[in-house]
Length: 339
Image 1 (cartoon, rainbow, N blue to C red):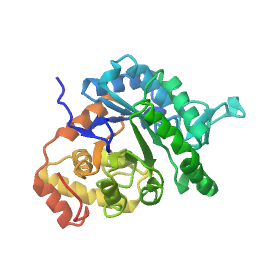
Image 2 (image 1 turned 45 degrees about the vertical axis):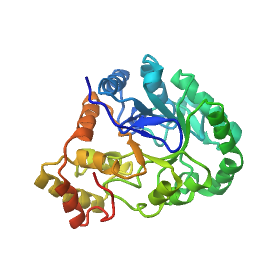
Image 3 (image 1 turned 180 degrees about the vertical axis):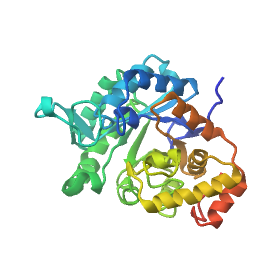
């Protein structure tokens, strides 16, 4: 029997989630193409390892991750796992289907997307996701990518769409019991501090701003989450790759090639890891869970072996002296909570 994960409650809701889940972004073929067989084997490995929290989004492979996750999960008992997807994007037929090529996804499906954070847009996004997943219930919905980097000149009016229209759709769905929690996917420290507080949320899904490599929002956005009773799910605890692979010329950080300053910091952390016989992924996965706002983490994987390695890292013993040395060397914030 797999070792069970601790469960934590999301905000003030009735939803509880395990501290470890599975993020399906890479099933959308971000860095590499993934066969259907590999996808199914990876989700099966997660299930067999005791993983019962699954996160996806229309954006991941332009619908492909939802299709793949839904195919595998809808064959499982629905009351045994929690499912999160995201709203704010509508998928549509491309203007020229034969020549369509995504600028973000190496593979994925051949649909174009448009943003829509209005009432009707949120409801349509939710309904589309249920169709792709092949499921009639979703536990939580997260508002996706409402930040300046994605929205550009349309940022202000899309914020208004959410505040004056879209949030009402989510509140209705929660009031009717169709979803149990309302969240927001966050990519930057600035969005955590300025966009997340615009509406009442039960959780934020933080993709990059709080990791072993970066605790920038520790005293601002993360502290505000504690104050407001908003839970945090860490969406990229391995910093989109480099905290899994370690330093090296092909390492990824922030969904791009890791810059030299990040590479150097990872090398310094790796030195402390060697001194304490600690594996870098274990340090990364366990560090974020020590923060009082954090209820779960959802690292991705595209192979059964990656899932199994992540689960082992989540449970691996780490001596307290390891964290003390990281603070002494200035490699993590001195005020950062540690296990």
